Image (cartoon, helix red, strand yellow):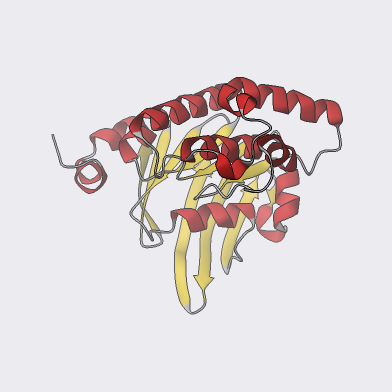
Length: 237
């Protein structure tokens, strides 16, 4: 097992956002976390990344206790996140944004290799490499956010709402690329509002409701689960 979360609790002030979440990810999988807004999906990703303080429980990456490490150390363990809302550095070029994603590496050859791979995954970014990130379209910024997260050569890529605000044709393209990334050996944890697209892509899924995991199953089973269909897939059969 690559990642194991046990009894994870996170508070925002006096409010408990996660009430003892348990989640497992095996090497090579795409695992999706579904749920309504405010269910705790992003909080779970942010806890794995070390971006929020956890108040209880544990997160293990193989034998490493991630819950005891600061965020920059977690990146060194090859766990990177493409955040919700993209958050690219708008006043830097595409290439400068990507290079920043490799801040933990001093190996120039490795960085160039990663850059080459990202430009192969996203040819549009190569065309726009000298352009300011702020001038890119939403879809291009999403590609850039994913590319930047890939620059650290991750073992686990955390994707938070990659399809948010994108046209359907772009969503299709981003998801096809996520499949390619996974085929190259990167394990993916995907938080996504577009439940149908996420389940078609993933191996397994978890459903969250107000800080709890309420369902865990194979993606194929969740796609035909009546409860999931009614809540997230727009009705039953």
